[in-house]
Image (tube, rainbow, N blue to C red; front, side):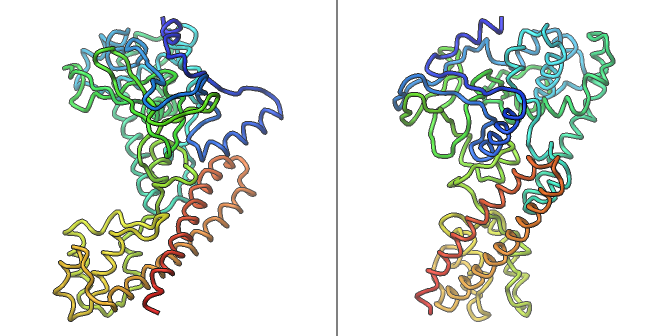
Length: 424
C-alpha cells in the first residue's frame, strides 16, 4: 500500500540521494556533511524537473500517505492504546509506531519511507556530553533540558511498552530501547508537519497536531525561500506551494521558519550559513559585566527590565545590537539624576548624549568580550578535532555554529564603531 501511495507525489520534483561504498564514498559523505551543516540537509533533497513559478504546487501528498495518530489507531497498536491508562500522548503513539514498524523490517508497509529516514540525528540530545559542553551557554542550558525531557519521556513510557509484549516474540525491552525511542523522537521532532486532528479519548490532552509526510521531508531548509504549506481540507492533501520562482534542475528548498541558528541546531540538528535570522544572545550576567559595581540603583534597574520583559532575547545580529539590547543598556546606564526618566527609555526616547554614548561603549565592550570568547572556543574545538577523531562530525557542527556567531559579532563591532563616530 505504501509503495503505491508514495507514487502519488506531485511530479514536479525528483528525489535525489547519493549512496556508495568504499573510501571515495566516505570522503563524499564527509563533504556532504560539511555541506549539510549549512543548508539543513543530509546529502538528500528534491530537484525540480521543470521551472517553478510563484504560487505553483511543489508537492501534494494525499492524506493516506501521512503517518498520524489515526494511522496508529487503525494499526495493530490501536487496541493496546485504547485500553491503556492514563491515556498515552499522541507523541508516544507515533514514536511507538515508528519503532515497531522499523523493527518489522521487510514486513512493514512503511518500509520505503523508513529506509530513507536518517539512521542517526545530530540534535543536541544525540550528541556526546563533551560536545554539548562546547555550546554557547543559552543553547547548552536548553540542550540539557531537552535531554532530560527525552529521558523522562522514555522512563515514563516503559510500562506502556511492556503492555505490548504480546505483539512481539522478542523482549520489548530490546525493541523499545532508549536508543530506539530517541531515534523515533528525533524523527517526529525534526520532520513532522502541522496537521490538526480531532481529539480522541484514547489519547492524552496534549496537542494532536503531528503528521509525518513521507518524501515531503526530503525538502531541505533555506532561510531565504518562502513557501506555503498546509493541509487542504477540500483535497484532503498536504500541499506545499512555492512563493518564489525556481529554475529547472535546481534543488527545491522550504523554510522551517525564521529561526536563529541556535534554535535550528536545538530542534533540527543543523546550522544555516549566512542565516539572516542568526544572532548572539546576551545573558543577564554579561549584560551587567561592564557596568559600574558602585551603582546603587542597579538592582532596581534590573528589576524594571525584568518587569517589562527586557532582560531576555537581547541579541547581536548582522545589523548590529538589537533595539532591545541597546534599550536595556540605556536604562542600565542612566545616571542617578536621570533615573526618573526610565519609562522614556523603554519608549525609545533619547535621554542625553552621555547616556547614548555610554550605552554604545558598553555594547562595544560586550561585543568584544564575545569575540574573544568565540575565538577561544574555536581554538579549543580545533584542538579537539585533532584529538577526538570519532567526534569529528559533531565537532564540525558546533564549529560551524561558533564560526557564524563570530561573523555576526564582527559585523556588529563594525556597526557599533560607526554608531560612536558622532560622539568622538
